[in-house]
Each structure stands twice: as structure tokens, then as C-alpha cells.
Length: 391
Image 1 (cartoon, rainbow, N blue to C red):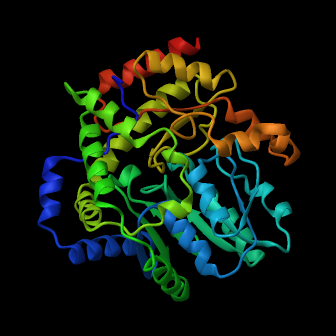
Image 2: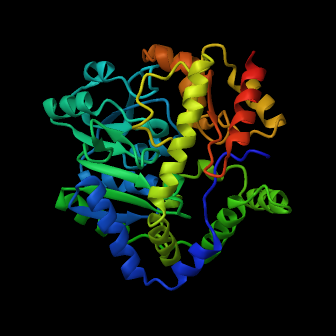
Image 3: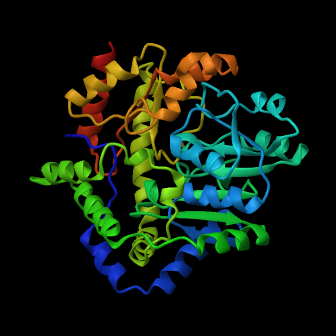
């Protein structure tokens, strides 16, 4: 692809610095960073955001229903089910593609134990309203911040509102693996630690694969990079993104922790660049009337992903056209048609559940590539191609 979806920004200088950093110092650096970011007392490093969410629910030591958004990827729902709970879907708001607080309260029953607020694409949910609902009904509030590292809401970072906040250290934290569980509840933190201590280590082969893939993906457009990347993705396999949570419960390897610690020292500069590019996309798409979900403040978004919705889109057809033009656009996941997405759509399940807005959006949404390596030429080409294929 001429215009890759994502750039992990893993350079040789980062790898060299990571080799000379001790694991203990790296862990302290990451822990201190997220304590400051979230205001939480207890920080646990995990293998992924999915693992952090799983540990969160297992540590509650109670099971029931968790209300969340249907417009997300499978890995955000898996931890709910794998921990013995059941997801209950509330509809979304088209304006920001996040869960609609007005649709949460009437779905609360005596079985409800919590609300999982998923900040889709780096756009914050309406946390004031959701926090009030959770407090009023004595429910746990879990923030899924996998896509909102660097996102602000009401002058505060996402991750500061919930009883538990879970982050990804991959996406726009630029690590090869890793996640964060942040909480002020000492018992939850202790229980999560105890459960995680029983997990096996991540295999060295997988760790080396991730380093190689991210290193190649950083400059995939270079000569030979495309072929190597295709080979690496072929090695990964087609079904790996649908792996059960239980098979993903590993301990994060030392080198992954050290790489994340080094990347955090670059995070402010990378986030600023990403946000500047994201705001250009946002402004241009809005001016061309190609962005219906624009009722949020782009200054507060981290633009981890750039989701674009319009009623005139046809996701499958549009994805095919963009791919032919070398633009690596995506759907909610890396491809449209995951088992989770299809389950909600089949047999009018979504309609029966009253998820009308979700239904109107699901087949009309595109996630455009947004890389820190893009310059004005790349941005203009993507926007012009996108505009032409729709018109």
C-alpha cells in the first residue's frame, strides 16, 4: 500500500536505547507516567488492553451484565464474555459514534454490574453523563481507553473518570505489546496482580516477530518493505485477530516493557504531530460534507483512528476502491465481517435490541489511514481519492 493505515514508529535508535534500559527502571517509568496521566494510585502493566479488561472483570469477583457500545471491535467485547459476564448493548450517537448515555439507564437491571465506556477512535464518550448514571445506580465504571490515549474530556484525560481505566500500549503508544490497568481500588489491583502472576510468559518467537513486523511497518513504503511486510502478515495468519482471550493471557516480555518506556519519552511530539494531521483531515472532510460524525472538539481528540461516517457510503465497495488506489482504509477491525460484527447483524438482532443508530452506521463507516509520516502531499492525495470515489 502507498498509504499505510498505521505507523508504529519503531526505529533502530529506540531498540538500542531499550537494550540499555533495565526492566525495573522501564516499569517504574511507565507506572509513574500513567499515575500522573490518570490520577490513579495503582497501575498494573499487562500484555494488552484486552488482558487489562479481562483482569478488571475477574478482579471484581462478581458476574452479571455489562452495558457497552456495539460499535467497536471484537477485542473490546471478548473480555466481558471471557470473564463470565454478558454484554448488554446500548445504542450510539451518530454525532460522535460513542455510546448514547440516554440509552443506558433503561437497560439497567438487577443483573447489571457495570458500564464499559469505549472511547472510539480517540473521541471521548460523554463521561459526565455516564459517570452520573454509574454513581446513581451503584455500578462499576470501566473506561476502555485503548483508542483514547491522549484524549481530553472536560479538561481531563480519559482514564480519570472510571473506577478502572484500561489502555493499550500499542496503537498510539507505539509499543510492540502491552496494556495498562489503572485504578484507585487496592483490592482490584492486588487481585489482578495475583491472577496475572499465574499467566505463562509470551514466547520469544512471538516477541521477535512483533519487533520485526513493527520495525518493517515503520517504513513499509521503502524498497523491499512491502514484500517483507506481506510475508510477515502471511505468517501471522488470517484468523489470529479472532483468537480467544484465554489464549492471549500472557505476561508482557521485558523487551516490550523497555520499548514502551523509551517510546513514552517521544510521545508528546508524536501525539502533537498526529493530532495536527488529524485536524487537517477533520477540517477538509467536514468542509466537503463527507463527515457526519463531526460534533466533537477535534482539539480534544487523540485521532488514534479516524472513523468517517456518511449515509452515502457503502463500506465494502468503498474499501475495495480505496485499496485499489493504494489507500489502506479499514472498517471497525482490520477487515469487515468479523464473527462479532456478523453476530449482531444477523437475524435482525440489532433491530430487536433497539440499536437503530448502530444499524444505520455499521455498513456506512470507514477508518482512514492516519500516519505521522504523512505530509501535505499524502493527505491531499488521500482526501482527493476518497472524495472522487464517493462522488
